[in-house]
Image (cartoon, rainbow over all chains, first blue to last red; front, side):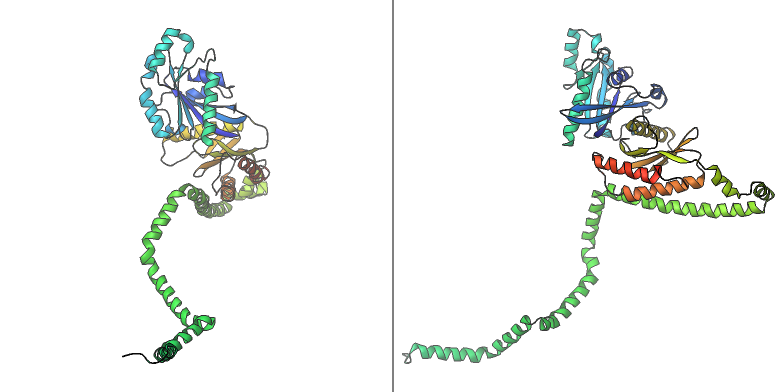
Amino acid sequence: MISRKVLITGSFAVGKTSLFNRFIHNTFSERYLTTIGVKVDKKEVTVGGREISLVLWDIAGEVSQEKVPRTYFLGASAVIYIFDLSRPNTLNNMEADLRIIQATLPGCLVRVVGNKKDLLGEDELLILKRQAPEACLFTSAKTGENVESLFLDIGTELLEQRE
Amino acid sequence: MLRTGPPQNEQALLDEIRDILLRKDRDALRRLEGILERRELLSERVVPIIEEQLEQFKEHFPYAYRQAVERLIERKLRESQEDLLNLIYPILGKMIRRYVAQQLQALRENVEAQLRQSFLGRLRARFSGLRESDLLISQAAGLRVEEAYVIAQHSGLLLGSASLHPTIDKELIAGMLTAIKSFAVDAFQRGDAELEMVNYGDYQILIQDFYSFYIALAVNGALTAGEKEKLSEQIFNFANRELSRKIDPDDPAIHLHLQEKLRSYFIEKPLA
């Protein structure tokens, strides 16, 4: 089975770890996030009969912060950039963060995700949909909505890239 | 004036004139044909010329083609930089290690010689019946490599592993170990220094870096400097033989091959 490194990053308290936990079975304690600033786990995804192992790195802190070791980003095939739909200011750094990601990982697959969908009404979601980047996916780590499909899409794209 | 003879006579006359005029040339041509058709005669003439040209070529080649060759080598080196580094790393590392080991050996011999002459050394030897170095070796009994990993340098993806006992998911161990390694490098910023050892109770994780991958061995028991050196030598031998060519991390056969080799090099082999 092929394996790929996938990073989960974004602003503070946007629900990165909740999304991560929703998708995987936790192997390591969350203390690692506060000690070395990262927690690694994995999920095997099956797409059209083909399997891929996504090794997920949940990174604490923000991309543009100096304290996040740049080496954590190296070798990643995909990045999930998360912002909080209920706090639009978490989108403020997105452009700069994505530029850093593209410069560190040229050609890497980047998925922008608006999390905490469950906290907003339909009208608010419609407005935000217009403001968010085109390929942005809205998820809810609380209800699990779109979480599985997010990782399935990433798995599919990474398998296609290989072919 | 009108021609009188028949055309045949004219032709014969022309042939005769041609024979007279071309006789010398035809003889020369026949001689040349003889030379060309007989190999030994031809080589007699041609070989000295070729040899002379080859000599000249050898003499002028560095000047005439130097730039082209340099460009070609430079391009090749650039294109296969990773392969080359993977190939050179274990060899260079081995040479440096050998040098350091020789120096350490000389130092140890010196210390041992002084120790033998000292009161403490003689006392220890009398009561234990063993030399100082043998005492150390006896303490090392029970040392064992329990887990061995080959991990991609930056992504932390597992390329191969073998272990004595069942453990948690090895891909996760590879990922977290890489994260800890990255953390140490970024946090303490000691130039090119890398994390080489992690201690956990009587468990030691020995880490050896190469260009595009690193090897981690989990050893049960306290390693002395000599044993660590020996194990490092073993790691370099392993890398040199099994990992010096470009490897495709997606190839399942590579994982199986490395698993088998890690087992035979480290897990099944006692540390002696």
